[in-house]
Image (cartoon, rainbow, N blue to C red; front, side, top):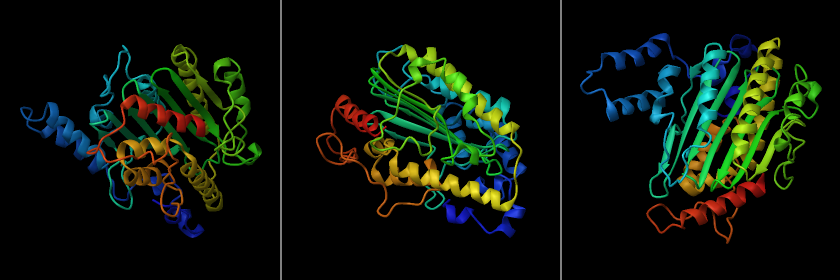
Length: 377
């Protein structure tokens, strides 16, 4: 799903300016959506339960022919326990964020639908991956609506070592508006990193269809714990980041539910309100301009996202390459030679040996991943 396949000539765009033209595979019909329900309803109840039921849901989800309600259950979501080690009563720290976002999307967005979480080139399924030896797993959902071209959600669970919730909301290109980015990480349940932002498409806020930072300022002002500054070592905070970005490094886990959760909810609600209140511009040249800037955002992010080291460490560099370029940032231009993974502490690539070979101790590995992620942020 590369940009050159999507940014097409103006005469073609006249007929396909809707979101479906940019994200959904052709031919997905109401019959297909009904078929997923029929497969479930018609199945022999004696056999269609437990693991069998979950396998059926997972297969339907992988192929994007299920309803949103069915997709919520794919891969056992929402998870209630971790696959890793923990001594916490709430081992899945950011699962309340996932669950709230799903409910809010269902209640608020128009024509919300499932988009297959799979590669456009290799047919690789991204909806779920795990590393049983290292006790880590990741689940990925992707949706679209009349308001948003793409909403992707990822939850990474490795017990107390690492918890991650990540989501990016791309407005439909008929709306010249910022991308909503959410990145929440926890390491060893001692160090926490959070970013929530309306990520602008242009350096000048006025180039968007409407200004937006004035909507965020009163929210941010209420949360002193979320007013940190990003390191400039790997990211330029003046490019694709707003002045009202919520950014925090902290060690008090209480901040997660006391400050971060309500601030996250308010930013998400404000972004949806912004899109809903903005007049759509379906002129082909306008749509193409927005898609071009979203492509540039994806390319910039794919080249710099420090989480790629984590994915390579747990699931291998080949999978991480496809995941970053064909799911996380699916409009990005693929770098020659694939992802450039930074060396971990002590040297060597973070991918390490394959799971069948000796591995580092989990806590040591988590500390190394944490060091790279925090430094790059």
